[in-house]
Length: 181
Length: 387
Image (cartoon, rainbow over the protein chains, first blue to last red):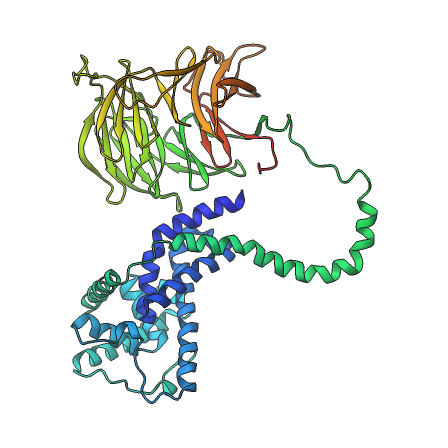
């Protein structure tokens, strides 16, 4: 019966946060299919670590933190595959690469070029409307790191958005990864 | 690009992209399938780890422990299949109406709404809801559409977030009565004007015009506005009891309103409407203005409430002998006969008190509230599926 109770609570959380998490996952990965999988996986992980959901006011932040970590792992795996294939030119994920159709696509293409941590800062701060402290808690970094990463990310976005061409600055082999400072 | 502009553009473009890639409609079903496999996953890990140890040291011990008679099982009071009291909770104040949902029982109290765990029967939270059950204004409670809804002060409805226990909105509904139901994606609440008001749970606002109840079968308003005395949801409709002997039926799919001459419809389900008066009458679900009586069941004279659960009909009643207490009678709809009568020990209120007791069904059993003592009783069937 405890399981039934948990299932009902998870169903309520799912109804409330699923669409929001899926959109955040898309902003992080640029791939709706992957975003769907990551969001489902986030709820399964939350189910396994049920005690973390006891403080239910922070359920949204906790679920977002799982999605960010899953996205990071997934993107690192993608990067490793790209390196293995010695891709000559990095391209954004398929869902956001397409005809140039306006500012929105430009923004997504630019977002996809950001290193994962900076991208996560932008998505959590400006899409999920997290405060700096909430973003720091979700990413497991200090508030200062969030501030600096966000500022750098915005500078890069501004620069790329102003450019007509969205040419990657660096190949995937040299891109900053999550673990770098 | 300014921060606000970035946030707006980001949200806009993701929304636009999402319109081209909507979520899978079976997302929750798929997640549930995965969750159902979780115990097996854990069990497999645990069993694999334990097996090697168990094989080495536990077999001799097991051979010793399992004798010819086997271990005695822990049993509940009563025979198998019988209704038994599983637990009880004493609420801090007077309480009346309740609803089950989101893993809890929600009871409207005086200035508070109580959340009781439907598994452990523990009081989880006392949520401050000013104006509930104040003066002559009783409060109703409903659970559904993502929230718990409580009427208050004869002038509004609180929206409570079931996850955080916070009151997230107070919606003005003039002359709100103590009957509220969540059905068909809307919240339906009765007013003291004899009308039904609909609330859109997504926006937290009243939607559409109030629906007047109490017209007779020819569409004539029967004298003074009738009082609404009960709302029941079932068989694709809302059934609204009035004080003038008519039942209003609102078809949830079409919104069509009809009236029937019936007594107090206490429950709708199992293919019938169950009308409680001096006896329990089982009627057809009325497709027109006339209804046929299928059966009449002689329940206790002071029957108060009916609930449908596990395919059976449960009638809550007062008994006076051997002492005053509440009882729950079980009626099997297969033969329309009484098949059990369970007394609830400790349910006797002070001699002068006679509040509106109620019974509600939930996933873990039946819940009975006795308002004057603030006792909430949890009942279940004594079988292997309980607890």
